[in-house]
Image (cartoon, rainbow, N blue to C red):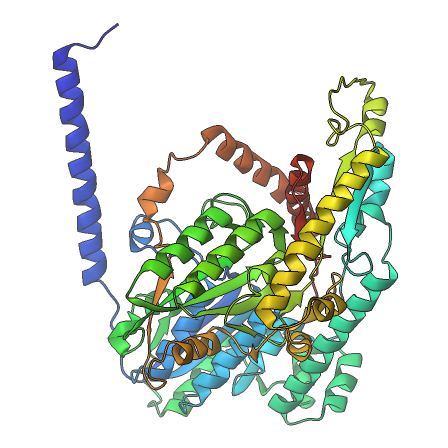
Length: 600
């Protein structure tokens, strides 16, 4: 039934009124938020909570905060708080409450550097942990003093790397994996589906990474606690320790309850005995604008985040559940926009990705080439990972900066499919294909490749690796393809090893990348720059009510995430990687870190 003219008029008026009310509510909320910005008292202590998920970047939307939507602290935000505290005369000390942050060892290095940089201002930094494992203690060791409660524990008992294999499961359900690997000795991402244990190359790389991490860990702790690396390794061999023993061995400074740490800070900062310690938390301090402290101003440098597995299409920031992904459409557009913006003097691409789609990686590589052609310097800052596809998008930057414990390299690729004929037989399902064309059955899910089909897949894989990946890395790094292939073959390197091999230019984090970007853009070294995030973060309500894309696909992804999150933690990332591998069924080549590495 057609709507009457009166009904249409009322509907329009109602819509306008709703929009006006919504705008008024948001405006009022923003006004309240602006008026209610915190006041930092003199001689205050900034209390930073270093815990939980710390994505490389997430937009801190004040509107979302006003309406009660929780926004996780990002790693970038945490570093910004430390930068602000260094120059804020009202902040006299920083207390770090370290409680199992979900970050990798690259970010742990960067956080330690930020703490050490803050200490150069003369402001004391204290760290408090209830329980400290390897990574928590590594971060805390950069502080001036470390405290545990008397009943706390210190589990600095060495590194363990766990690798899971699923071939036994596939055998049980009748699924036969078929993969083509370029760099077969080290490019072992498919090994978790092809094997039941580590191969020779896999074990070699794992041992190399563990040795590098362990030696750096021992040296850093030794420097911080005035010991030798040998002393630290001996202490590790006899760990764990309770808090009292840890103090006795010089691993911590004292055994204090939380309020007693405040009392220590009062003494340190010259408070009267009856004065209450003035503190400000990270949630409040985030609302203090960096430019109000003389930071983040001057000429503009674009910062583009490539966080998560590389996929085609739009990036996902994980705002409403799920993992972050690096979408080629989003990143390409961001690079193009930054390159076309005359106010942007340089581009810093922050890469925190284990790789993914080869096609999507190449599209981003091309966008960087175009930006450089427009005389926009591009500097890559590597976070925890910049491997395989993550290295592909990094390799042609003017300069590459990585942390010592960044995982990078993994120059190789693979493609393949899962033959589920055995599963069909087990379920009592039968199927037949009727084909036209010699290779029409290339992606049949219940048949092995024919000799002709396999030859075509090998040809395609060789094209991706030998005609694209190798030459582009060689051009970007000013090396021969032979030299790149010698250090490629899927081999994973730490940032330190990558610098030795010529894959990385400088050791450091985002601050080092910004410093180099200023040099390349001929900007004054002694002046700060305005860091402009591309693409501009979408306002909260736009994200909340976004109707773009296929709604059914979005719903399916949400349901998939619910299922994955219900699985044991050790399986969650493997299942997410499996979803990326599923793209091989339509012919995509994959450039992925050869193992899901978690070192505890």
